[in-house]
Length: 130
Image 1: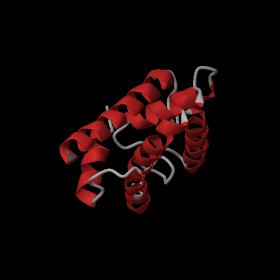
Image 2: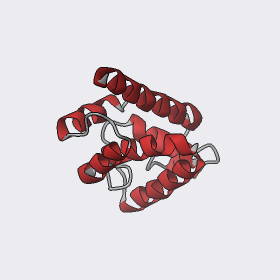
Image 3: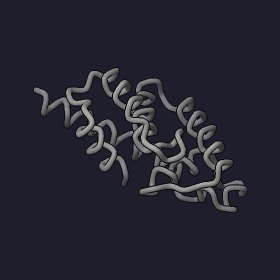
């Protein structure tokens, strides 16, 4: 049963990441001058940051990304928000690129997933990048 729940949980994460990526596209460039163009929407910047293995930005870029993450979060259906928050915490999108392990564990446990220990979260972090 837990194997089925784990697969369902991973499937939900992949689906959420695919939806965010689909809507965000790769038109924007996180932290680059292209972000000022009309094509660089909050979803595009979040999608680009999620695509990067280790996103880097100036302090202003990280602040903009934090605002973008909040906007994208609010635009998602209620059912997708907890998974998006978990991926954001694992990828450090609201903490300057540093994984917020405590927040990720709390979010994971809030989703009632069977495995929320550090090893499971590390594996999830690796799998959350396309």
